[in-house]
Length: 58
Image (cartoon, rainbow, N blue to C red; front, side, top):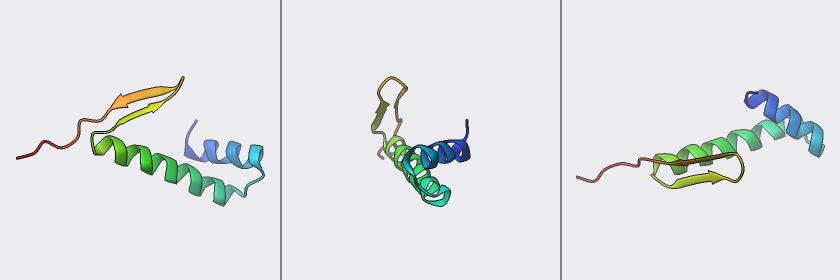
């Protein structure tokens, strides 16, 4: 499954346009990536958990 597949499923299950669903998918992954990059823990119950490494201070 890729982002387009996920957006298509989201659109079909929730009556969204594919374009709107893709915006949701892109926003979700941008938030996850941003949080992990800052070193925040990202945990999606029953699916995935990762602790970001963050940036070390100087």
